[in-house]
Image 1 (tube, helix red, strand yellow):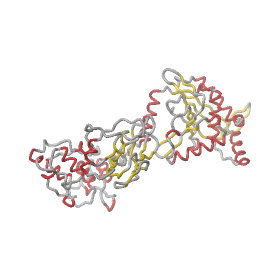
Image 2: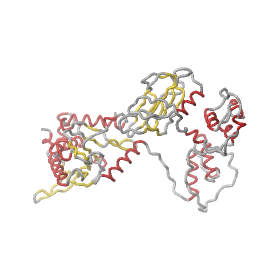
Image 3: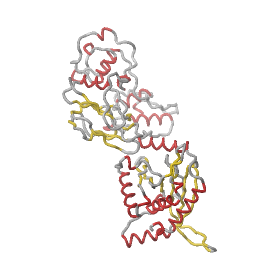
Length: 480
């Protein structure tokens, strides 16, 4: 009896519920050892690499790139000795994920699991396959594809009763469907593109000779599109799925568009910010800060000390110093209490491909400006490369979002729950300012504090901005 083991989606972090399979690092037939890196999985905001928990040969890849799987679901199957395709099919069909609290391997349940997508695909039939198709001897030695065997088993069809037309005399999926009179449901809905008359001339010529992908031909048939009306852009001049969809829009008189699937990061951003706007009573307080002294201090430290500091580094340090002076802003609302933090952990928003992430600098108030600059730069670089550990972007007691480098004059930021405040930092601009009875030119930067009114009152927010303004307009004061 062969020994089969499940590779499952691990749980990284308490809040992880699912992950999207990105790319396999191993292939069927590879020999694995515990700890070998096997597959990249995108969680809420980063890509992690799952490791093998068992030793043996990878005999089946179940989780395909692009699929989103819940924690504990089956990724692949490893055999510690020889295993037949039938054994593997039975293992996959009978596998049921069990809840896991960490990245340990769940075991296969003894009770049958929910039918696999392939079994569900073949679930709608014209009726029972019939006793004559079920009769016969052992069919385990019949040369058949994995999908064909699975469908036959789901419909009680003995493969000895099926005429094989597949490659090398193998029973194919269509052979089983034809033998059993099975009506297969589409695994994905056809594009919902309405086709109007629009006065566009439509070809009626035979399009069977047009080179196209099977998916493109099926969609064209569903949408009643003649492939002679489609401009091919696929490999080797073939009509591809996207070509048919573009043609469908053009023939309906609509405007072309692309529909992009949501990444795990984008789903998480959408969920968290929707929750924030719906549940947190935001309000905003803004102040203009003159930063000429800060710019001079920055220039001096670069020339005399060789320190390359950004304006954002000064802002992070000033926020930390201000939160020590006004600790009522360094809080979280829990529903039954206010949680006031003694340590300042600042999350900084970093734009990455497909979204943003907020790496956290811990205990900022106790760090020097050069140390903050070095850590902020390292976190930002690794965030953009997708190499942050989970604990490096979770938590934080206060957030900063800086769009000054894009020339933004002013903006509002959305609070990052469960935090109670976020500072939006705009660009510094040369502007006329009034000093006494005269006018002068100054570099002015507008900052906006977005606060949770359940936790932070307006007077507290205003006091925080006063203190912050003092530190940034007199940067030497926060270096003491």
